[in-house]
Image (cartoon, rainbow, N blue to C red; front, side, top):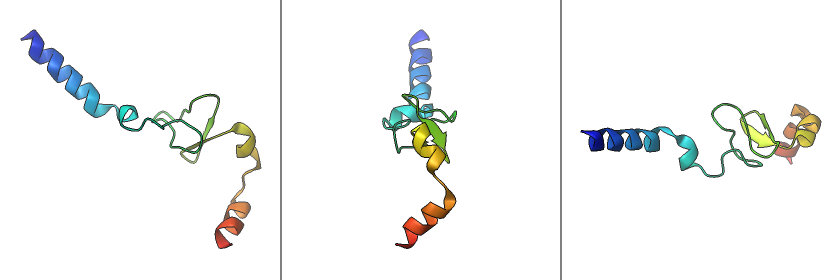
Length: 69
């Protein structure tokens, strides 16, 4: 009985933890963790991990101009 419980528990953990599936999660330019955090002092802005300095200078107008070029 104990073996079945351990097998079911490990299977559940492997399937439910999306961070194991995406090893780049939380890194620069990659998606944030599910709780909105990132690695190494990065900040989660619009679902992407960025350096805090670059997040302050980012604005919608510059994004639109870059996409038009």
